[in-house]
Image 1 (tube, rainbow, N blue to C red):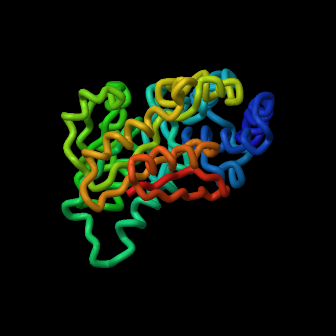
Image 2 (image 1 turned 180 degrees about the vertical axis):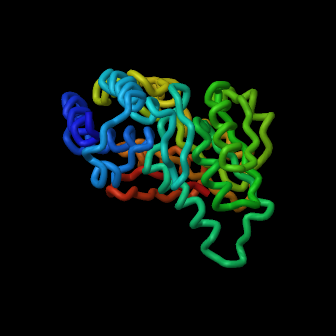
Image 3 (image 1 turned 60 degrees about the horizontal axis):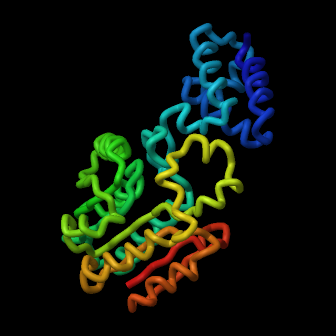
Length: 285
């Protein structure tokens, strides 16, 4: 079968569960990963596909048709212009989180004389390690620590840090257990994209998220949906250096409630909207 014919058949099958645009984007990612670039489909569209490529592409297709996210199918995702290993133990990095990185970096690069030397950063709930690795690339002299409750997630994060030649100190720690806080020092920056989706909102979410991405990194109890922000605010009272700042990603519907949590602890706060105009980030200092 030719590249053109197989690609058309492939996208048609994907369109049974995805809209036309998403089906095309997914097919492009899978074909690229197989070494068949978009330009090849234009210049060599009548070239026959070899048997091994067809086999591999069909294996991927079966998983995709079971709603497995393409990033898990391929074992990789792009974030901040870098490729990260991902699997079922870590969330797929989102473009909105790139804006959180940009906000953190902007605060510490506004003045030329501000250097990252001596800067200490704590990332809470690291997952794939995308946040600390991106920060290390932007602030190379910073000393960065990342914690997560999942040993499997930390393994992926460590592999990603190694792949990108970044030195990050990864620590397995249950942040909700305040008795473990004594294991951590104090920091100039505390950054986090913690779990913040109440369990009751599961029904609103797409199947490929709730069936494949790790629930522990997504959901919080309905009775206490802001638990991580409360803990971060309490932790920061004793573990944020003078002049330090906190940056957190938040649920688009609850930025003001998160702002109030930090305000009650006597922090000054700012809410930042993402590229879509949604209130998705809070800064406290």
